[in-house]
Length: 111
Length: 114
Image: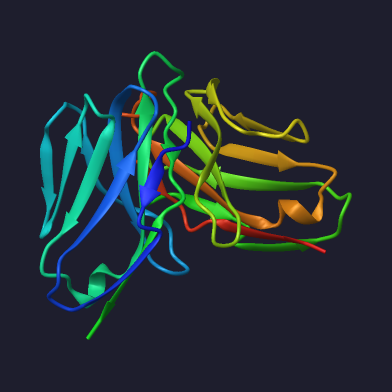
């Protein structure tokens, strides 16, 4: 039931864009995105509750395709502060209301 | 500061021992979640409590148990510890029992089993 994230890691230069994908084999009720910096606790970015809904957090946005059980996180004009590991969490329909996280995508933004 | 307090921050113990991790949720939050994060791994959901009652259960071993007390703080008990139990254990809290809102994570308790 763990969602699959891709890529596992990405390195980019400051100002470049990146996309992180999250997919599930189960029908989803919601998708959550968190960022964890090294040695720190995960921090909430956004929740997507409806199919096709897009959310934004500063220059980070996300989409949720409910029919395909997929979500994508878009990081536009990356800043050094965006470095960290991004986790998507999924809540499956008709299941115990638990949030299951993917294995994470390590994002490194270089100057 | 998320408002979620976890103690202890670090714990070193031996195999076969038992430890208790404590979590105080944010003021007003009724749900507490426990997650395990092994080295370079994702967040594995263990268990959730809502207002004192178990709400959801994940991949929690039988050697592990948890409870939430009337004052809403929670404890995760790990017994018969094995080397593989070494990990960072996060507690998170939220207002509701449903996972439709933000989870606030504590700083974690790092457990090392030698």
